[in-house]
Image (cartoon, rainbow, N blue to C red; front, side, top):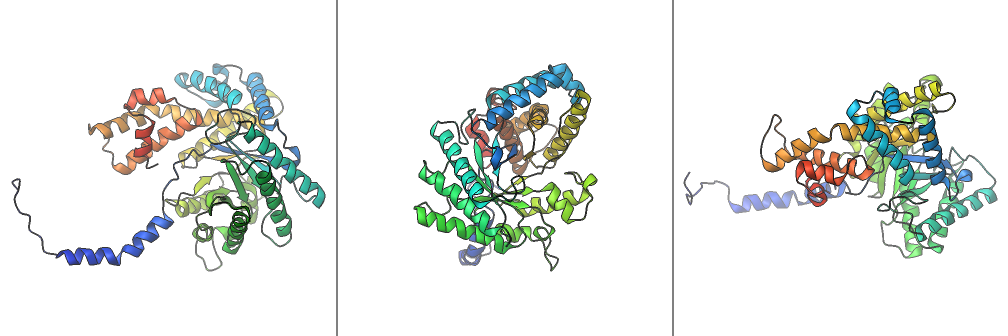
Length: 431
């Protein structure tokens, strides 16, 4: 057709307007339920430390222990490459970055555990532990060593507690501990930006609704803005995946959180045990785990609720050969999770930190050139051997941003390959 030529149509404007009006409620529901990624940094792991073992130097102690393990069992790039099967071009940058990470920011997310890792204690003892934990966190925040944008320091960017669950036997104790922890934070400086709370062993949506009620009442009592307090939901029971009527229940848990759910964390051992898996076979890569995590992934897609895989209980301790075996197992499990779009997991021992970061850094560095080239071609409309769509460009930029956030790659490396800065990458990723 020529420029200025009239285009023929059939429907009147009133038809289009009526369609828009009829879908207005649907548009609002889509925006409410599926707001997309929150656009903030997601930690690559969560470290769980029993409340009675948590101290002001916990993070730095974990860093020192992890560095000592690396120096003893893989002191140079060649040694680490032999253990993990890293390619020659990856070995040196991965080893260097792992060392730097352990020195600068060994833990990205720390959960002070008042649940399984802490167990039942006298009320006075748990009260005191909750107060002590909050005071340590507040002191770190006051010293400028905590928060999502902070690198280094005695407290990681994200920190909080895992309370006891909403089951009748421990409900009151869990609520009291949460109250003491939050109240002490408020009385000693306020809630930190990187605060994260974890609700374990969720079975029914009503338990999530109860957590929402607690958050609402605390916000009202303390004059906080509505929605200030969010929480993670741990998926550790079969009922949290499949309901008695055969329907998937994870979406109901997310809905019950009323926008406060920040993550879904898979609990490897509790969930496996609930399925009857014997102890020797309880693992992150067991078929029951894959099924549960696939349901979690579909339920959380587009909601802004992030995913975390579980942990391994095989600790890298003992003779070098035994440590290497544990490292290879952990490295393989982390790489497997990353390939399945589970970008976070649990680490239970300082010796897991070297292979957590080695796996994460290898994952992002080995794909840097290809992802950057595809994204640059998409932006330039230059084509290439792969024809990418906007959704893929979003995934490519998200991949690069995750690599930047954890320290696997530098902005200069990404910009040199894509001609894109952080702002452009954020925009392409929908952040």
